Length: 461
Ligand code: GLU
Image (cartoon, rainbow, N blue to C red; front, side, top):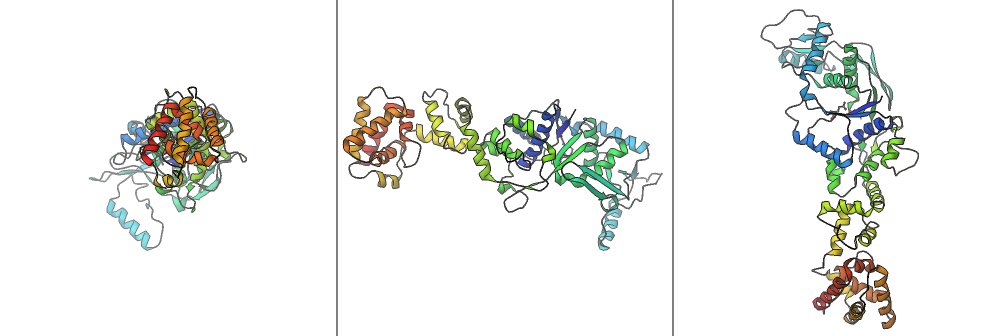
């Protein structure tokens, strides 16, 4: 059974790079009928926060990514790590190193002065005694020559020369706390994770983790290191480009479906298909198709996808989404006309919410330029002519009903459509842009239409 994981360090919010690897791991597990587990890597007590863990869980909840089983917290597993450290000590695969900080610094400085790679010199590798008054760190015996090959599902075989990248690295600090690469390897094994999909910023950690796996006699998982996301200038994505909190995408008005679709296409493709439902993603995703080069973040693409999903979202769901913007449309009797009209126009839910408000709230001011352009000589007569038609007609429901009345005014006064359209638009919406007027009137209804026309006449004549 395929078991994948997402293993965030809760040092801040969940950003989209992290979410993308979580999504890839989730899809791959689901495609294979496997499990996707969540491990919170909260060993760095100074930098971790409970809020950050909550933020990650909140983002998962919003996006509908469900992890299997209980969450594993590394901070609760000290006993387990201690047991494996002891095992390595007992087997002579790890040892206590009593080197003082000063000596270590001295060695480093000499190596730097000689333009050599800085590494531990192995002084205590075969030391059998103890040194009074020094709390030792524990180092693992790493292979000091030969090569370590990471058999990567995205990058192919990546070979590292041990002497270039390894030394006997620390697996437990002087206070007994285990180090990052050690606990990752132990946990991935104990949690039964056999496919690790993560950012390629971790590739250089993998040889160290392989050293731990091998020392403990664990089977290696399959690794997939996913290239980074770049901005349009080809640089690592920064906050300014959009590497923000996943929940900020919710605030900006993106839907979960659009964001997930956007993310799956950042670094993965399936022929030239752009739109993927969750079911399709689960069916088609395969990490072997992850691109070898960095992917480019593109906001227009996200907007395009979001507009697509908005158009295709049922109105009841849209109304639920809009509740986030303090809009209760459930009881609006023209909800269907309103949302049908706006889902064709808005790129984001935020934009849609703003458009809804523009329509359903009576304007309390009029855009000066629009007034100048639309309220020209004769506009009062035209608006009055239209208003009296509306007054005399009790049964007005659909956009077409209003359209007919506009048409009648145009015919009777022998004017162009613009002559009524422009002043009516400014009267109804306070400005010259916005959705189709016939829809607007059908949405706000007969009484409100009349009220807005009368308000505009008295305010502008
Ligand atoms: N905790 C690491 C991070 O947040 C991920 C570790 C891993 O995926 O192996 O970057």
